[in-house]
Image (cartoon, rainbow, N blue to C red; front, side, top):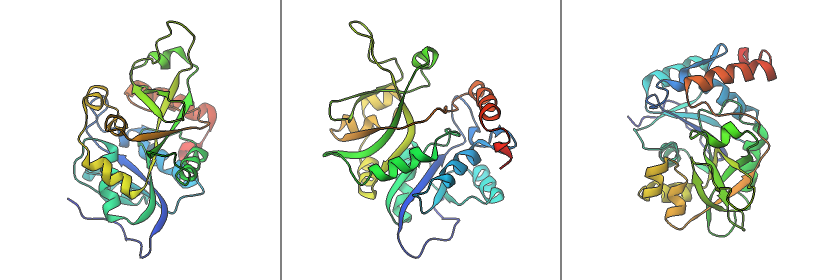
Length: 259
């Protein structure tokens, strides 16, 4: 289906956030609707976007009727899409039907993403480095377990601040020096033109091997500008992560889950 189940804006929005959500995650089916406190996981991501100050709209994008129905119950604007390989491909479809100057992809498994980080991505889109088609947030890892966790994507940077490589392995290998390990956050910013280019490029061997969509730009010679942000949250990739997220939620924000 491609019908939009929201009222389309009559004038272009400046920057909008789109939260791609799918039901069939191999490690955690139904993850967007998994309860975190008394609200589903996607609600928490939406709330963090609503707390950002630079956005003109927040949408969930999904191909699943159960997620769409939950959004309607929760009062969350939702766009129904086709099936896609990646969240960014899903965002690219939404961009074809939703006019904006820029689109911020906030992954639906980041319930603690800092609103200030979302705003920082929005601002960075006005100052892209030459050759860069996207802005991607990162933060430093200080936990050995997270460095070794293949669910946590690591990034290494070039001297110009663009991404050199993303991997689920701990990169770089500490053979000659003690490196800094950087976590790629599920928080990306694009122009509409960049999203069209992304959707027209075929996934390369690195993207297919690692399952990291920003490698698509790198493999085709385009830049991904990395932006350091303050973020102490975590992504929810597995049911075990959800249990950790529940403890983090109540240790840091008390009754936030009740909204």
